[in-house]
Amino acid sequence: MSVAVAARTALAACASVSVVYGRGEAQVAALRDVNLQIARGDHLALLGRSGSGKTTLLHVLGGLLLPTSGTVSWKAEPLSTLDAAARGRARAQGIAYVFQGSNLFPNLTTWENVAFAARAALRPDADGLGPDQLLALVGLLAKADSLPAELSGGESQRVAVARALAQRPELLLCDEPTGHLDTDTGARVLDMIEALRQELDFALVIATHDPDVAARAERAVALSGGRLSEE
Image 1 (cartoon, helix red, strand yellow):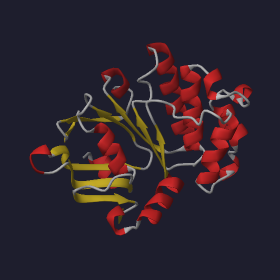
Image 2 (cartoon, one colour; image 1 turned 45 degrees about the horizontal axis):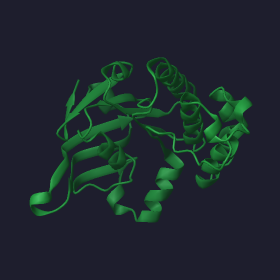
Image 3 (cartoon, rainbow, N blue to C red; image 1 turned 135 degrees about the horizontal axis):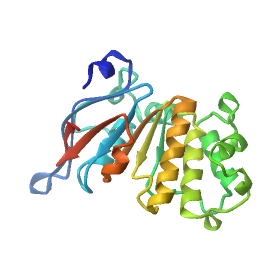
């Protein structure tokens, strides 16, 4: 951990976190003694091959998964001390996800997808950023009435970003957000996410297997066999 990161207030932190799936001989250690802090304004890449533990670490940081051992905290409060409902509120009002696939609701328009996320987070018009403004930020206001099936892969992923930002998150977790996109489209999506991070001032963590994607981040850590190391 760098001195600069340690000196800033951590949004999310892992302390000696391990995650084990299964029992007995079928046990698999997805994370092994991971220590990590995500500070306000961070742009961090988690670099690793498939199966290295990247998705598990994102789920732990976002409170979707409690560790087998160790402590994961959100704003200095251990998530293990919160019940499921309280963890859900913390996620909805502070943490947002963008997945490898856009995971849009297929029967809702792009506008309705974004509006649904805002309502679910109890932030229907946070800081004046309603669905129209968010779709404009990602350059897709003209597609507000389109269904996901009518969008390109890049457009779908941009809507997924707008939907995540409808929660007005302090931490955005992206799991291989360009994995299904061609190189040029993926680069444009990453450019857009970084521009929005600077404009809206959220911390960003991107899990990727691609060193070129990781090189865009201000800080990168590598995962291999569930163990973390600074790049």
